[in-house]
Amino acid sequence: MENTDKKYLHEIYRSIKKNSLSLFKNIDKAIVFIIFVCTFTGSWFIYSFVRTHGVKFIDLIQTNLLISFGALSFITIFVIILIFMISFFISPIIVRNLYFNFILKEKIKKNKNRKILYFTYYASCGVIAFVFFYNFTCGLLLLFILVACYHFIIIQNPFCYKKLFKTIKLFISTALLIIIPCLILLFLSITLNFNIEGSLTFNSILQAAFILFTIIILAGTGFADRHQRIRDTKNRIQYYLIFSVAICLYMFTAFSAGISEKIVDLIGLGYQYRCYYDTDLNQYLIPDEFIQDKFNNKTKLFVVADIDGKMYIAPKNKRTTSFYFTAKELAQVSCNK
Image: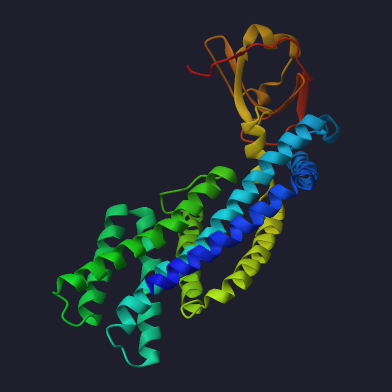
């Protein structure tokens, strides 16, 4: 089974290498295409940002902003897609460890029993991941118990050191399967601009449920691929690429606001708290509702966008601008009290 997995990974590597060489041979066409994609994605995400936050679209339509905005958004979506693709390629190798090294080799005869053992295990892993999200120690302990139970229930002669080594491999592969959706959620929280909540709230339950269902989906993918043939790898790659396009389109629509907010922050355009001296701001007659805080002769504002000195600011507890002013030589200072 390990040889099959090595051939499977080698086939993926060859396909990626072949496509990369083809890309370098047509680099001039690729550059034109990349510029077009960056401009298009930049326009879309800028539109998403101004629609959500009340900034004037005409102020943000600049060539340098379009390309930088588009490049960062394109890279963000590409990395998200890459993570999902890697997960779908690696998960069959991970989950087949249980099916082939445990269930088949230990002579579980009935196919129905094999399926029950397989899906019960990974459904339990999903529940453990749900617990793991709130309490690392408790989740790890439950994983130890689950692997130990399967070791003594399935394996014949469970105290043989070779069988113990197989169980350790199962534990490591299962831990890796649980870590993958956690890393995906962490990356999504960074790129899509939301917080991972550890306390028991509605949002935290949704986030934990994401980890649970991701594990079940990955386990299902692995089970479907358990008898994969090497010659099917090319078709599988094409299938995942099509699936990635669907993810890309979904990201463009469902999370465009979150991604655009993060990019505006990253490139220093705004969507962040900034502080200025009171004496510098007095001339702009900023209404009190737009002042987030005042301390040590400094005023704290939430700047939605700062475009060539044109400052769009938001009122307290809101992220949509309804006031802007044109600032000249406005010195930004630290917000530390």
